[in-house]
Image (tube, rainbow, N blue to C red):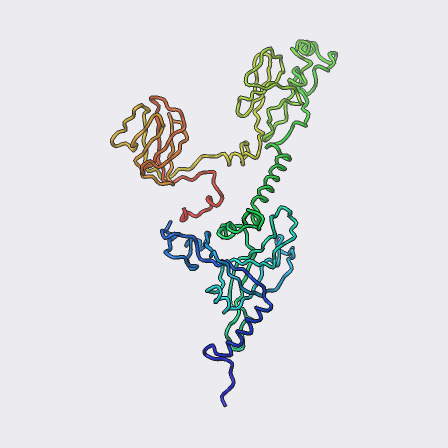
Length: 473
């Protein structure tokens, strides 16, 4: 009598028996899952670069970006496949034991029947496939603005054979996948931009799932609150009363309220001869100074006028704010001249126009130029004819554009100077050569110098650019 053994070198009747029984269990106790089949990256048949090759056919094995090994633009089948799956329901709890707030239970492990899956889908479920779970629709959301029941989409993150799917014949029958909630990102635009959020709305699923508008509103609220709490940069010293300094001996005090009997004859006569002793508390007050405290406002709340030209008939001690100065400048009249008091260096923080280190960084347009590859000096004339051996190909006076003999490369930069002063310019591609246009007014006989550099590193740059290795530049 031969030995009993369930193992067979091929899949026999025992395997088919177990497989049918497992498939029946999914039919009886499983739930429907709508699967959006991943077809491959959205790439053409022409290579964009060495790291982004072109493919003749769509395939899930293609890789869009060979450098980062990722498929950012994905293509999905227009058909939707329905299969049965079994998984364990978990409660979503907040985990406070880690370094932040984590939501547990949002990752699920689902099991599919292997042969039914291959028969329906044409292949095994793989990373990138998207699943819709109809039984998890939220029919009673707290947000009344939602157009319909909120659908639940999950994306496959991992897939392998299920350990519980091996029958006594030692052949696998089940396929286990790890799924996580789908988010509004570039990878799934082919799905969420094509599906309506409901029957009675024209909004796409992307508009409902996306948190972009909500995040923008939160950011705007934070900025509004910050501007209310700290409207301008620097330090507010307007609430600090400044003791005036008398004009007699320079000590803190009020000559207008001083007792003449306590003064010497000379001091008393000096106080009497003062042009406006009653205004000494204002004219002789000096504000508290420090880092970014100047706001172009008089001390102790004194009255001030503003305009673009000084008024006539002013008296000693009058303050005037010139708004045509950048930044605005506060002056005080001493009887003969308008004396500068301070400039308004306290400015709004949000636009980044302040004199702080942050504002200076944002407004910094300077660059560090390296590896010069061409130079020329142009004596402005109309018309201008460059020398045969000059680096300049042509110069047009009306457009202020200079065309060089350097082939255009997007990373090249031009540093220009007019009569020895650095000026700004904008570069462009003119018939394959590097050209630039200056933004400063040009007149005849001016000397325009420029140098073409192969490398430029702008002082205002992102941290990732600043820390990028040289080999990646």
